[in-house]
Length: 468
Ligand code: F6P
Image (cartoon, rainbow, N blue to C red; front, side, top):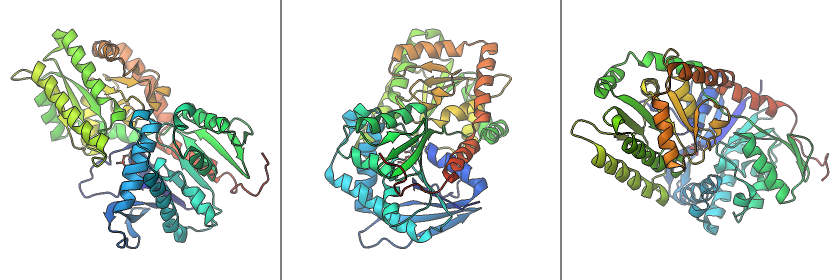
């Protein structure tokens, strides 16, 4: 079996506390690599002065070897905070209004991708499969090809790919599209994302389609498919079951004092629809007064990308909003919203999912959303809770038996909360069973194997064997 090299911006080097890495990419890749092993290269999370970037730091954990590079302060500002998180992220999440295009940031983005290529090059052996992840690193394969790398290189996008009308507003859209054609396999979360990408190629008159999955652009042929990412379903279900015995679980149950728990777990990000969700919860409580003092929303929201102005503003906005609702509706012995700004360890999280009667997973746009999948896996099959899921999350295309909502429709979501809380046991069981079947079939190992089978499936294709 070929060695696998994974490259991603964020690398979740295990810390001593065992805190869950925030973000689906880290959780999923760590599970996938655990059994297969391999080399994982990425940013150390540290920034330094221009002349202080040292050699790669390597850390071994089981059969995964992490290779970490520092970036300069300028790199982090331009490539990560700038182009990745103030252009690509908002564009891919349909937030044109938040995109801040700047030549300096764009140049920084391509420069850092060149830098990643130069760090990776000495580590590559002939047979290695190279798998690059997410929007930070779109041009990386093109840079590696420029340096003469002939290995098979795959790319997986964890976030949505928008329709051409949105994508083409980006000044460097053609460079990014062309950059992607340097890969052999390009994976998306859903067919919808894959089709949007194909529509972008067609709109720009780039190459042609050979069949459902294969394209030719210039001298390169590549495959593009959807590979919906999964979780470690069986392991997570076991974790949730065991968590019911822990002291945290017992303390939490005691503090609820018979109230139903509703849970929301998201990185603090505008794409997650947290403010709309709190509005919906407030509307539900106001319209269903009989539910007041009978339910508690636990919103767990680790801070994220705090140096980016939009995220900093959001931290204040959500904290104020939760405080306002608690002030307006709370009583001396009941707090409607428990708002927590830290990440929890995975066993604790699994136990809370299992305890919750209802999960609110209501992003305005999301590549997949693994919280939705973890919540389902954590349920007690005799008395499962209900998943209320945004139709704009990639997960909604698989979890069709969730209660699907439009998160922009605050009143509609409020009524869906009310319906979910009184859903009969029989219906809850049926919905849960059907979602669990999907999660067991398409778990994170299946996701990884399917992608890597396709990636291993041939030699790097270039050399003018196809003409446009
Ligand atoms: O899952 C999408 C993603 O952007 C990952 O690429 C990233 O690791 C995660 O969310 C968390 O974001 P960040 O790495 O910017 O903290």
